[in-house]
Image (cartoon, rainbow, N blue to C red):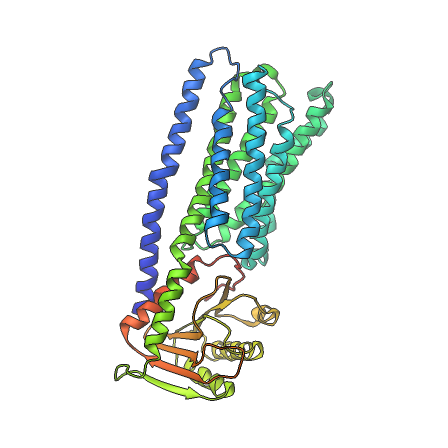
Length: 456
């Protein structure tokens, strides 16, 4: 198990280092810069004209839009990730447009606190798009959806927006005697805030703390909390025009801070995806496969040939039965049929029933099989993840207890016809290390299709 622990620790060390760089290189300077900007605005704008308040708040989403566009165009994202980050992109677009309209009202039209205004027609959809992003994450995390407490935790986060909505309705004649538009706008914000904040606490509490993406979720959740708190404070302050004019600069700062947190979460996600480096590791896997299936291997290695897939499947069954505590299996491609893949996974399920201490992790290329998903209710110590980015290798890699490596592949690269199968065994530490590092990187980083059972 030494190679497994070494591979995981190497990844976590690199992740920790990159996280510190993000905190020191972007998040802390950006927050300090925004804070100093608003302190300067506070002392310069003694008449509270609001002329400069929203300028930083509109610049930050524009920068975030550029960052997300770069992420969508140049980072190797899975299809579901592209779909979800489109919502983030639309969120930032709406925030940017709303911010620019708000700047126009304050800087050019001379209105210190324009509320309600046309800018709200963009701020409200921004909250909706961000909600779509969070609920798409929540839907894919089966361990959260199956937890009985996630609904209660969601409603717990919604208490204050719901309370303020009820208060606004109950005191309608007192708060909004001559401004029904302001009431509708406030009610829309309270409803959107309640929906927006609902998934945050469950996602945070049920995400494993050793998950490299925990900081991504944490930053998004903190961003949402600050946005919702700022919305409630701003809308409540709007009941008194003079009070809103004197405090609008402060709420603008909190909005800016929230957008910085959101951008930091995107940058961190991008860093994690770049660390995976599918293309680089696909080439390494390909080179390692060619060396592994070379007949001139060391004395401890051996190669076995199979003519038909049934023999290949029996060999895989015999291999996995030798494991005592841990089996990691990477399907670089589907070199066996769908029926055979499902049959093999059923064999692994039986192994976990016989050996309760056995933990199995499997990485499968997309598309996923509904038959495998339906088996999750019967699987106890098995976790499965899918990945979209193809690996340039026709093989199935099995790592047993971190000490034994079996590479099962096709002699020919043509997977559309019947081929001879080759099984190569080695206990070479260097070769095991290569595959262990690859597996661990993919396992820790691959969260796009995050339906997995919690392992023992």
